[in-house]
Length: 527
Ligand SMILES: Nc1ncnc2c1ncn2[C@@H]1O[C@H](COP(=O)(O)OP(=O)(O)O)[C@@H](O)[C@H]1O
Ligand SMILES: [Mg+2]
Image (cartoon, rainbow, N blue to C red; front, side):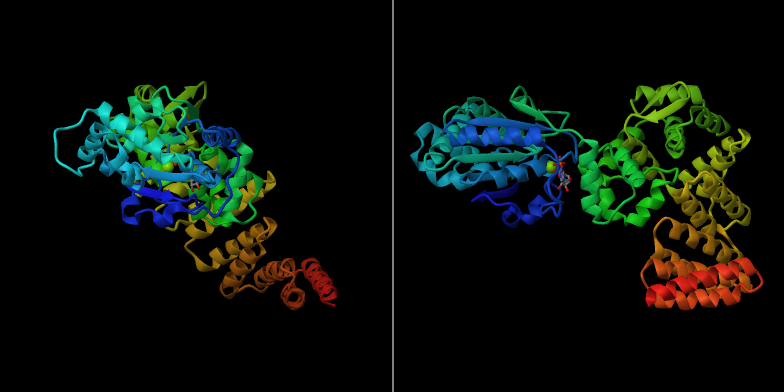
């Protein structure tokens, strides 16, 4: 059992947690959040109410119920902060210790055990046996519960007490019985009890207690959390995509926000593959997928690999793959993984899609994209075809790289500038010839500059420069570098590079004149 602290209230009670024991508990990862608590007004009010009741001499119980990563433990942290003047005793349920009889309740009461001698003899004996302090016949659960109740109310005689059990679904059955008994009988004891529990499998002992359901965050709060985790500005479209793909689950948001830079996120947000979410969530859903027949799993992977959720395309790819698409679709729907409506197939939750996609091996994913690319081609969807073929590619391929470049131009014509950068990036990665690759890199650098990433633009164009033989191509690369330097406020260097570019572009008088003007402009700013 992970003791998460007993004593004075403090914001970070990891310091007193037995760190080895708290490994693997829901409390494990994030004890000292660097970002502020967002939203949760009603849950906080429920916690505040509970604390207020106890301060006034009454008692109270509150259960916070919700799925993995919705922020139950974070709310426990809030309660600890808010419980000034309280004596706090907290434990976290751990899956591996679920078979340790009375383990959780023993941990919870360990700080109060000096009071045990004052208990009525039968209660004292019951507790001592339950906690393995003395040998004896197994005590009545009722008696152990009563002893805990007495102990807690005695402890609260000179200071209000807050007991916390995080993840009660992981505590041993004996402790659950005892704590359920106590929770039901707390009245005017100055004892508060805060419990958190998973959304499914609530132990019977904790049903019908006052419960606050904790779900995903509201969209604006989710965006705020994501922004504070990444710590850098993010484009609205990127935020929207991540918020949607994570179902506004705080853990998934924290996971995504802390594992990717703003630029990586931007690149992923425009790709036709899901944004990866937290491992924990992923594993949970993957477990459900793995129980399905092989064919259904393959069908679900095809659906996951197709961002547009085009039901026909997925069915066509499945059929080409030799899967009975209709049967597989029904099975996946019956398993509550996907929902189909008209021409769309969508995942019940976006996180399921990510779990399926990232749970598959690289080879399986590429195979899925291969079939989807073929299906797109036969339907005359050039963009879809090139996306999927690129995702299916195992190595450089000029044909494909050229196709991606053409799709990038189409994206530019639609005003989809970020998509253009993503397409060009894939195109560059798949281009076998260094000279051609350098030309595409200059186009990519220009797209990055247009997207407001001058540092990246400068770097890419700078890397391309030595590979460019042709003078006008070098001139173009220098224009991008000069513009990128200028955008970063490096006016003197910008003026120099742009003047250089004007010379290199001599064969194209208009372009050369433009570069010269830009150089003069930069020189003026430089003073
Ligand atoms: N309302 C919130 N504001 C800011 N961060 C949050 C919020 N809720 C959860 N988090 C963060 O999300 C992650 C998962 O939350 P956690 O409390 O561990 O979830 P749970 O206990 O429900 O599995 C943690 O990093 C936590 O700090
Ligand atoms: Mg937790």
